[in-house]
Length: 121
Image 1 (cartoon, rainbow, N blue to C red):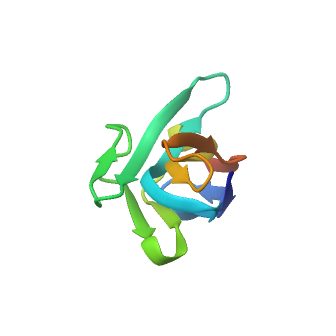
Image 2: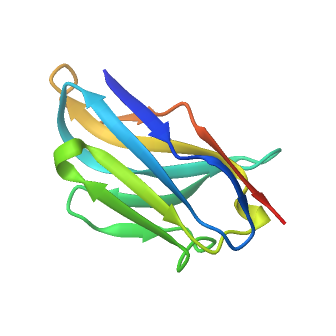
């Protein structure tokens, strides 16, 4: 079992910045990819950013150039630096991981509980 613990959400004014963190714990053998999704009020959960085990990064067009995803491999932690935020970034942000564990050798998907980000205009 993998546990994801998110932090860093909060309220920020338009144009401001926030940094989200997500730490993965459990009997992890390998992380194939770790990243972030978000769900705006009344909307569906959508992809925001991901970083693979090999270090490749991918971003949704809506956040490209403003958000940066990084990873600390030693701590199994991923960060999302969000700059130049707009009210459209308001959402619950969920950490997402594809990982194999000692009891599940095939990679499985796990989700965090989510952290609220609110951007005021």
